[in-house]
Image (tube, rainbow, N blue to C red; front, side, top):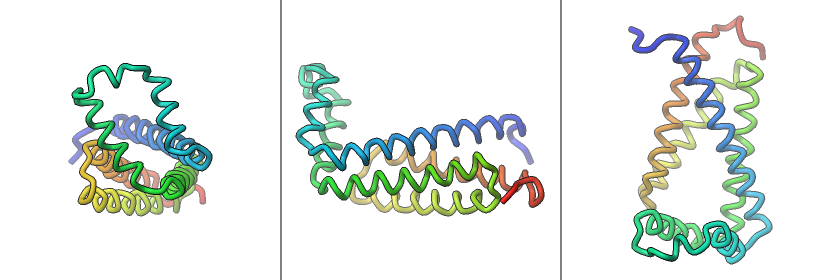
Length: 161
């Protein structure tokens, strides 16, 4: 039973792949920055771009979430975050590139890897609950379903690799 058209599946698939590609690029950039900048430099840079807006209302909901997130972030050594961001970004970028090239084995491999990341994110949620982490995990699960739909749709002969 189909709930949405194949055209809608295709659009959602390509939008999801594009978003995952952008997230991967962001992770690579963040990991690279964390290789060279210490936390103090990061805070000064963020303050430069946000100005005094965040400091004006410290009870603001957004500011509270950011502050809570930064406290947890800064309790972990910077090289650990650099490794996590770089490794996740590079792995996801390779998988996305394989999907863009229609390499057949990349589709199930991507589903497995994204699934493992989602499981890890569920584990992380136990220790550091975060609405953003829930959204990222739900997006990953949704993208896995779209990847597998695309894999089944293309069939064995339609994809190279």
